[in-house]
Image (tube, rainbow, N blue to C red; front, side):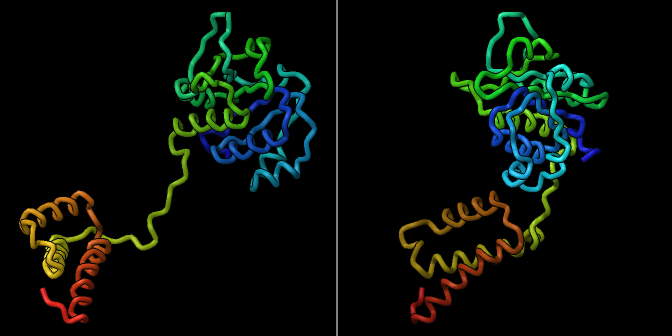
Amino acid sequence: MSDHPLANVVVVLDEPQDPVNIAATVRAMKNMGAATLRLVRPVEYDPTRIERVAHGTQDIVANIRHFDALDDALADCVRVAGFTARRRAAKWRTATAREVAPELLDAATTGPVALLFGREDRGLSNDALDRATVVVTIPTTDHASLNLAQAVLVALYELHVAAPNASRTLAPPRKDAPPATAAQYERCFADLARALDAIHFFRTRNPELIMRTVRSLTMRAAPDAREIELVRAMAMEVLRALARRGDRP
């Protein structure tokens, strides 16, 4: 994780009151690439319980640090983003989580960057927000109070999305197929037309217009070779089923 774009992002929870939120925060950090969690005067919790709730996060849990004072938890940070849903009377610099993400990532190349969150029942105090380089909000409806761990996840997600090469690369389909060829398209359309004619679909419809629409729909879908052959197989099976019953177009 040391080379991950969020490796230098520090999550700081000021007086968290619920171990479940600590566990959910750890899970969010693991998902998004942050590895350092600092807790200021946290509720008592069992680290093994945190690991049971947030599977596969032993590395983060083992390195959680506790502090008695917020200033100590922030001392080495070159930027502090304080997250809050409250408006402040003081004219403080504010931004949304999305707006501030590129700035925080840039600062993280020079030193630790703190994402600071307050306790569940009242958020960050004004005194804590005074430590923030920037006050950050997460856009919501009028019901602005987010669960602590949810707020952490949203904040880390915005950083993750803004960071280059942060997300895992999804493997291609196990049975990737080449593009369908023009010849495959034409065989498919011919058999579809035969099948539709066999079930008397064209009895009250214009065959040329119907097949042109089928062509247009299929071209927009851009099926691969396996998919176009599957559609053709459906049409052929219709013809075989009619033949078994002794029906003829």
